[in-house]
Length: 553
View 1 (cartoon, rainbow, N blue to C red):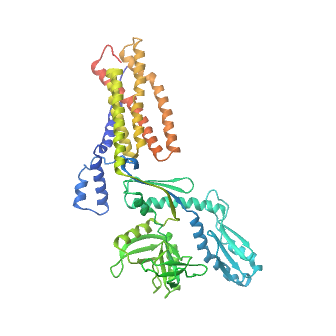
View 2 (view 1 turned 30 degrees about the vertical axis):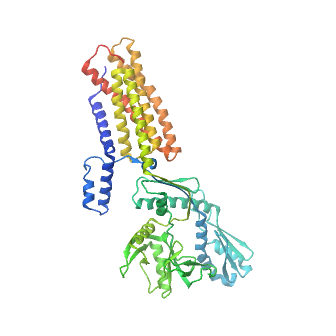
């Protein structure tokens, strides 16, 4: 008997209603977007009359989730960056020198004098005067090695220590280099994401490409140069002992030292010890503030490890200058007046309020572990994005209208039922995209257009099967019931294979390919639901009301 239980009918209608309500905000995109921005600003403390007015544009009891527009629809900036992982090797070797010096000093009677000599980046060379003590020196330096923290480097140590005449040569092991590369890329991804999130951009795409490249796409931002200014600053903060000051940029700093310019003193330079006492990696917080003279500054706070090193150094070097260095420029070099315990302090300089705020953001987000070379950059203007939206709308409307007309001409009243289900299908797709916060791209629109064409396939299978069953003269009710039963397996099989393809595209692809896969996969799910349940419910309701003796499909 052709019937559907009451609880199934309620569930079907409730699902449709939920999909329509979730999709509704996309019909008022600009209004809802302004409302969401205003609510976010109010939550951050900007409770102004203007924000209150914008927040009231959309009822609070209705969903406010939107389908985010991708880079090709909204416009924005695209960057492809290559991370200079070799910089990390060099920094590791520079930081290792004090440890090597400290471990060899107690053995001077055996190894003789210890001297750091110039070496290639990523390599540390130390000369000892007693060749007979080389084996002991190698043993001591090898004791500084630590196990490699990675699955592929299990059992290996992070340092390779060898001798070259009277020199000790220290480099990173191959296993440690691989682990360092992986950590550097992952840390760069996380820091870039934090910096972009700090400025409140919507749905950025930040993902790894290849071994050492990062793809960054940010919709809604003004230009690629603006994006580079946000993420391109390394923000490497270090605290280094001051050896002396000079006005000669070509001055010989001596082994283990470096010459760096002052940020706000033209022609002035500082000779510093290259190995920092504390680095920005040990910062846990940085906030814009004002110093005792009312000038913009930045308060900072170290983690326990950094606080201990900072406190020990200041206790032992009272009366000595101490340089605060940001990206190879000395921003200040105060004299240590007393022991600074607690691991907190203040960075002063000739900052504006905006500069101190930006510096705090960069330091709080963390320092990029290595420099980046931008291999590719593009700016997509909002006009081009609007053209893409208009083209996508036209394509969708044309496909939608063509399918509606075809179904009515081919199947009459049953075609109208299929068209109603198709409209519900589109609403469900946008409702699901809004629910999961998906980003819609131009390939995603192509996936929706393809779904419109595929959505009626299941109905075509059912209607053709009903036509065949009507020829057996079993009556219209039995023909409709058998039509759905016998077409079900073909519908499931056809859509499962397409859904598997969408899953593979999502897993193996990236960027635009994933956008296409998401809309295609969701479209398959909603198409099967509307074809099997919604169209059938409409036909059953019509049949119960009219009770026709014959039907024409």
